[in-house]
Structure formats: structure tokens, C-alpha cells
Image (cartoon, rainbow, N blue to C red; front, side):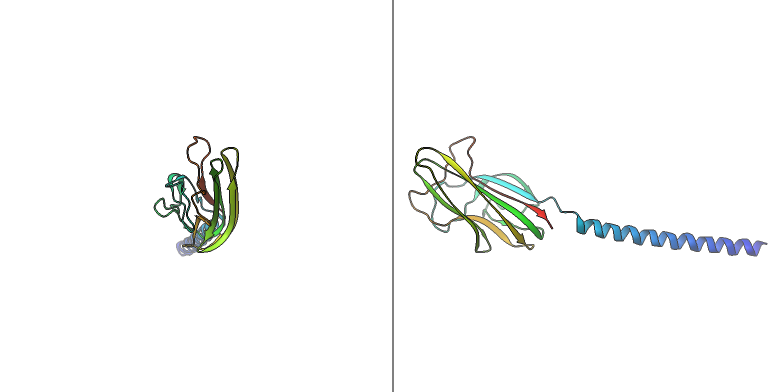
Length: 172
């Protein structure tokens, strides 16, 4: 009788051990799948350029960083470096004073993604541009002036009309 109890106990211990191993493997597989499915929270928004004058090829560096979740935006260079691979949405909001132009573009590692021109004869005005782009980790996006001169200038004298640059990872 004692031998039967030992055999049953040994069998039961093996069943419990096998179950625990299977459960741990299932939990690990679930966590791997969860990490692959979930889109990380990555976004930024910056405004108030360091300078309002525009010269051809100049990168627009925004000095006020409102959000930088993922730490991709550099307030030193004005460039955003992707911390995660995925599909991003970027925007630029451009404001100019009356009779001033701005020719800006969003650039990915030297390739223009979208261009914009802003001009209003009578008053201060603003425009928006957005672009979707697939990025790999380490790829860089920025706003730069595509055509500069003394008549090309951004406006930053208004408390509610801000030139700004931002973006977010929307799918990985």
C-alpha cells in the first residue's frame, strides 16, 4: 500500500511539475506576443524656433519642447531620431507675418517628404502640413527651409499662433 501511495505521489508531483513548466512557457509566449502587438507610446511636440529668419537649407530648431516621450527630438539639432521602428505621422505648423513668406519642408535623412509655402498679404496667418512615413530605429526627420531670403520669415510674436513641429508613432 505504501508503495502505491509513493508511486501516486511521484506521478502527481510529475504532473504538477509538467503543468507548471507548461504554464511558464505559455506566459512567456503570451508576453512575447503582447510586446509585439502593443505600439509603444512615442510622440513629441516642439515650438518657438530659435530664430525666425529663414535661409536655404537651414534646419528649424524649436527651443520649447512640450512633449518628448521616447526622447527622439533634439532641441539642439531640431532633428527627430526614431527610437522605435514603425509608421509615424509628422506635422509642421507654420506661421508667418503679413507680407512674409516661408518655404519649409519635412525631410527624412535628406529626402523631402512634403513641402509647404506660406504667405498672407494682409495679416499674420498659419498653415499645416502632415506626412506619414515608415521609419527604422535611428532614422532622422526634421523641418528645414527650402528657399530663404530676407522676405522669408517665421512669426513667433503671437501667444496663440506658433510655428511648431511634432510627430507620433502610430503603428509598429
